[in-house]
Image (tube, rainbow over all chains, first blue to last red; front, side, top):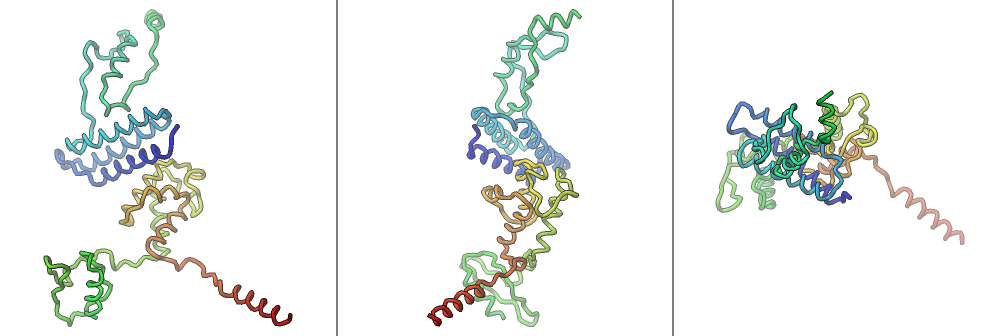
Amino acid sequence: MINNLTRFRVLQLYKRIIKLSHSWQSINHPLKTSEEQLYIRNEARELFRKNQHVNNLNEIEEHIREGEARIELACHYKNPYPRPVNLPTYSLPPNHNRIRFKSEYEIEDISRPIYLKSYETKEDIPDNEEQLKTDKS
Amino acid sequence: MLSTTIRLLMRSGTLIRPIITTVRPLSIKPTLINFNEKRKTLINEIPRRWSHVHYTYPMIESRVMLLLRLFDKIDPNSLKLDSKFVQDLGLDSLDIVEITAALEDEFWTEIADVDSDHFLTPRHIIQYLCDKYDIYEHIEAVSAGKEYLEEAKAAADRAHHH
């Protein structure tokens, strides 16, 4: 159940990101300051709305951690975009022709860092049999 | 006139940049003022950025309504002073946070999160800002003295007749 304290923390985080976007100066690409500012604001808007309906308290805590991690990474590396992450070991890149087993999705979910939590791909994981049938047809 | 400004500065000894409301005539030579031992500045060096701005109720109302109309999630035709954000205009708590951040930038003040919870209509925002800047010309004066006088008169009449 969402209590008032978590709601307050989420809104405080959102406000903090907006304030950061107003005072953001891009050091690596000085001409793209306004572009990065817009990126920060739009990204926050999208992701906060995407995760609006999360009800589990632990998940909300993790999302708050994700927001704070993004802020700290952006301030430290002077780069608002998320850091790219390698695929986990013993897994292959997604390919439409290949059957992807459920364990691959699980490994990918587990090995994802906290600051990429909102980028989970929650597609419908078809059973192996169903996928074989669709491939045949 | 200069002595009043010095008294203002000395009374507000903790401020580094006090707001000076008196006008200094050009005939008076600039003098040095000591705020604390470390710094001496001329009176005309003290920056006065927005201290000359005179806040009035129509000005605040027009600025707030303009800001809300510029927000892309609000339909400007259906925006009125008493239209509720959540019920009528269909906004979110996240949108209200964005609006509060924009208001903070517009009016150069800080608005606490506790206060922004109570912003349900534009009228609440305008009332909050009027309270912040001590504007009360738009409030109708209710004279409580009249009713009290009538009651006192009636009580005195009753006592007189008994």
